[in-house]
Image (cartoon, rainbow, N blue to C red; front, side):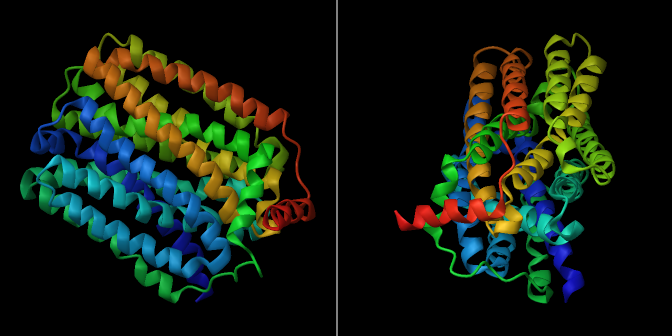
Length: 402
C-alpha cells in the first residue's frame, strides 16, 4: 500500500533512535552487571558506532542496487534480535558482540528511513524539511527508551526491560511487507559509489556528521553519568536524559515547520548557527556548579543538536542532487560512515578523559568538537556548489569504468 511507504521511513529512524539511545539509558545498570568502568563502557558505544560505520558503507550502495524492501527487513529483524542478545548478556564479550551485530540492523533501519523519506515526502523537493520531520521520530525513539528504562526496569529488571525494547524494534517489519517502494536505479553498480568520495558534498557533509554524531553519541552515552555527578539520583539522571531528547525532538519539529516553506538555499546556514549554540550549551555543562545549571546545559544541548543531523543530510542531498540522480543510498552511506567514525572516536575520548578525571571536565573535548563543526558546516554552506543530476550520474559512471 502506497500510504504505508512513508510510515516505513518514519519507523526506520524511530528504530534507530531506540538503538542509539539504549546504551546510554541502561548504562548505570549494565555497567554494574558487566562490572566495567566508564572507559570500558565507552568502548561498547564505540563498537556499535564502528560496526555501524562499516555496515553503512555496504548497505547504502546495496540499497541503490537491490531496493528498499530487503534492507528494511534486515533492519527491523536484526535490530530486535541483537537487542535480545544484549538483554541476556552476562559478560563484557557478549555485550561487545551484541553491539557489533546491532550496528548492521541499525544501519539498515537508518538507511531506509533517511533515504526513503526524503524521496517520497514533499515529492523529493525539500530533503532538509523531510529529514527534520523524519528525525523527529528518531528523537521520539531516543526519548521513550530512557523513559521505559526509568519506569519499567525497577519492576521487571534489566533483562525483561531490554527485551521489551527489542520487541518494539522488531514489530515494524510487518509494515515493510505492506509498503510500495520506488524501484532501484537501473543498472546501478556498487563500485559506482566510490566516485562520490571525490566530491565536496560527501567530504564536507561527512566531516560535518563526524563532529555531530560524535557529539550526539557522547551525550547519549554519558549524560546520565554527568547528571549523576551533579548529585542527581539514578532515576533523576535518566529523567533528565529524557529531557535532553525532548529538547532534541522539539527543535527538530520546529526546524521541520520553519524549513518547509523556505527555499533549500536557506537551509545550509542553519547548521553553523546551531553549532554556535552547541558550543555555548556544552560550555555551560562544563562550568555548571549546581544541578540546575547542569540540567539547563543538558536540555539546551539537546535543542542545539536536534536539527543539525537532518539538516546536514538534507543539504548534502540537495547540493549533490542525490535524489534526482538515484544515488541517495550511496551518498547517505558515505557521509554517515564518515560521521560514525566520529561516533566511534569521540565517545572513546570522553570516556577515557572521564576515567582519568571527571565526566564534567571531559566535556571540554565536546566543546572543541562543536567548534570544529561550525567551521566544516560553514564550508559545506559557502564552499560547495550545487551539482547537476547529470553530472552526478557521470561521476558514478566514471567510477565503474575505471
